[in-house]
Image (tube, rainbow, N blue to C red; front, side, top):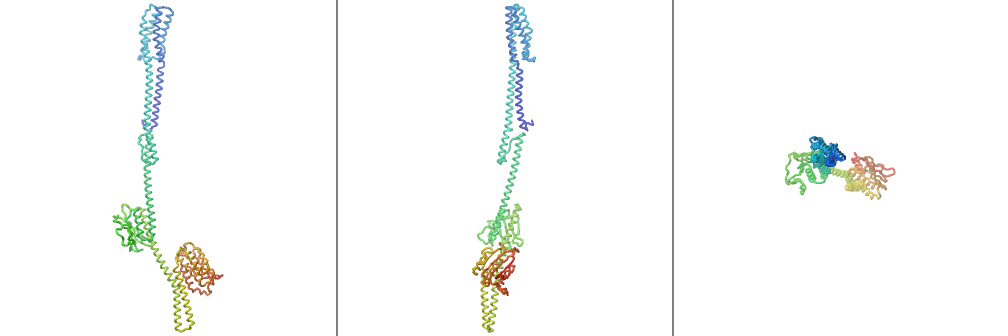
Length: 607
């Protein structure tokens, strides 16, 4: 029985076997009954013929007694003999049961015994005596015929009982077959169709992503095992999907947090590089930092660089406007009431490798501490703030240095040109005063006056050059546009076009170096306009590896061989500028005529 609980195939096989067995039983029963009824019809006919032979014997015997003759006697004896032969026929023996207590067997034996012991002898006696034989045999035959009728009835009943048995066997077989088929169909419906339909529905729901359905079929057979396996699989898939959904949600939250962090870093870079009040730049960033990390309120104390004395405090939560607030319309840091401060504080210094700017303080709840990523984000924001403050400090220092350098340049220009000319004029005035006091000749006095006039002209020219220099601006980025404007200016003054070639890499020179190169070119062109008497001028700027070379060439009269030009103010100024650039100045007469001014130096950016 255990195998039928664990196997649908075994149950279906048993059902098919039972149906086949019922069919086989029905067939065997039919064959047995058919075999048992074989000869019953002949036996019934033969028994029925015995009754007719009984009446025939009586008739022939009576005819013989009334009209004795050998023919009639022979015929009557033949009929008697035929009756004996029929009653002892093998056909009758086959249809008579062998069971002694059977009623048909007793009836048959009584008839045979009655015939052989009484009727046959009485008939033979009647034939022998003839008309004197009497008619007692007639009464015996009349009593014998009902016994034959009863035997015939018993034979018919026996045959009918066999036919009824066949019908009963076939009916029982049919009923059992129908019952087995019904039980098999019910089992198939309950244990195959219903659970299979559930499994198919579950498979469809799983294919649509619904993992909540479960099989309710409980059995030890194949579909029960399949249902439990399907339930286990659905449960595992549900757990797996739930785990994957949790991981996706976690990754989504991490990506969202990373995106917010990147957005905060972008806002940090954008806000901290703005030219605005430090409070207006920092408060939006700090509030955004509070929104994506479990810290707040945040307070920043700014100190003088590398000093302990603080000059400003910035907080994301203030009940009143800070005293140092410069914008009365801003209310980014003002709140209606203070939030109860958590218990712990995160303190980070705002500093770079060179400078300390202050301290960053952020409060947080110990039960909700910032994680490592959030701490790294806070540190990055503080580092960006430190970098922004450091860049601002360096920009201020650079601006101060530029202003100091500009003033130094102005002082040097005044000292090297106009101040020396005025000193020379002062000496000439003193000389003129001495000559007038000593009543020197008029020629000497006029010579001094001419020198004074020339000195004044030189001083006036130098003053104009200085004014031009101080008013000169690099409106466009780079040295090349400024040189092109200078070349155009001096081309107009000379009356012909100056050849110009600029071959220096982009951003090779600093702004200060560009100013000195521009002034060197202007000074050399100014000397050409005044002294060279040239008809062709070229300005060439080239770069060979990390060396800048500036050439100003003309086809004029050149410089005297005695090199008196070395003491000329313009040459002195150009030498000072070349020295400031860390380079050299060379003045050389060209073989074909004219002068070549050559300045070579190495830019500081390349050092």
